[in-house]
Length: 242
Image: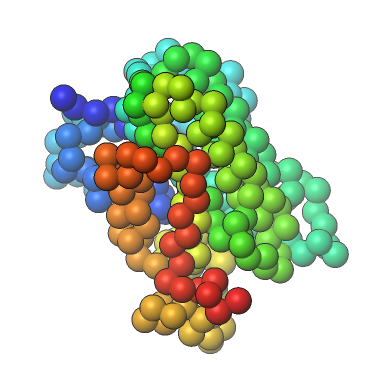
């Protein structure tokens, strides 16, 4: 039977990478994102009848999201998010509110509304993309980002606890830097990027998107059937050096 999977942030970064890696599986995809140009390019020579594109910006009011068009889901990957630099000493309230609202508040509301509207099947599996910035590490410039990602981990535990009666599993991953367009945007200086990569014990590099996708795939699958409420760090040994 074809499984139904919803991916927020499915048009870029980790969400898009997971979509590409999982395309050949027997899934019906519900992709939520702002710009589908990468998705359309990827699908140019492929049949896309098993994909529902949902254009939505998490900056917008969730009342604009048509939950009626969402079927009961078997899997969810929650990967929508943004990152913006802002030192506390230069605190910018607008940046803070934007990052925390998109990464945490709107995401938490979205999942709550899916539950409230009975859009998640019993025995479903949910994976939330957090970050080591919200789990173990703290970095300059990442005040709002770290708060939002830590909140996602607390959200994961709360959902796992409340949804366990329906055998719905909820887990999070906490990646370090991943080679995505977002990482490239944040790490513009090649010299300092090379120094940063030296801190990664495995091969002195950032994670490949496929390595994050493989971890998500494991947590969605029955191979992790007795794991819930947990956060899996995927960092190539980076946090071991701290």
